[in-house]
Figure 1 (cartoon, rainbow, N blue to C red):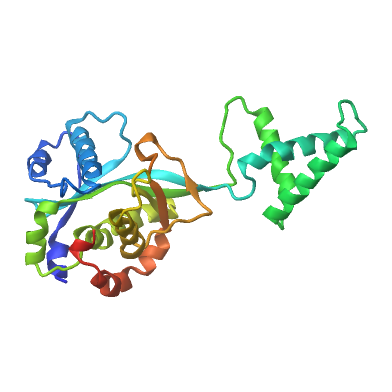
Figure 2: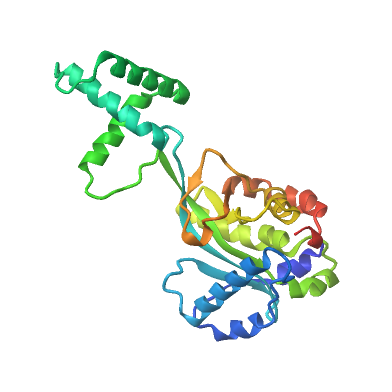
Length: 294
C-alpha cells in the first residue's frame, strides 16, 4: 500500500457555497447503474450538491471531501448524535408494571377503591414477577426505575421519550466513494478499497479529535437498505462494514431514525476500540479486501 500517496491526499471541510467543489463533483461517478446502491449514492451526491449551493436548511451534518486537489476520491458527512439503551424496561411492559405499581401503592395506603378482584390482581402480580425475572436488575430494581418513569411522565408537560441511558456519539450520515478514480487509485499501487482505506487514514482521525473535545463514545451509521432482498450485494455490503470498518449490530443500543434512514440497519462501534485497533487493521485486515469487494 502506498501510504505516501494516501498521506498526500487532503481531507477538506466543505463550506456552503464553495462552488469550486461543484466542478470536481461533475466528474464524480456513483457506480454501476445496475447496482442496488447506485440510487443511494446518487441521493447522497444530490444532498451534497444542495449543501454546497446553500439550499440545506434541513441538513444538520457537516461535509468533507478527500481529494488530490483535482479529483474527489470520496465525500462524507458527520453530525453529533445520541445512541441510547432501553434494555431495562421494554415499552410493552410499562403498562403492566404501571398498573401493578398503582394498585400496590393504593394497598399501602389501605385504599381499596376500584381495586380489582383477587384473580385479576394475582394475574398482574404474576406478570410483574415474570418481567422482573426477565430484567434481573441487581442494584435499584425494576420497580424503582418504574417509579422514576411514572413520576417523570406525570410531571412533564411535553411528551418525551424515556430511555435508560443516552450516550453521545458521532454519526457518519453520508459516505460515498468515486468509482471513476479506480484507475488513479490502482496506479498508486493500492489494492485495498478506496472507502475502507480512507476511513482508517482520513475519517477516523477527525472522529477521534471530536471525541477528545466533547467526549463522544460511539461512532454510528445506518447501512444497507433493509427493504431490499437478501442479495449477495447486500450481504457483501454488511460484511464490508462489519469486517473492513469493524462496525457491529449492537443489540443493546438503539438510535433515533430520521426519515432518510428509516429502512436502514443501525451499526455502531466504540471510538476507542477503532483507535486501539487502527494500526492492526491498516496492516492486516485491509489487506484481505480489494476494490471489487464493495
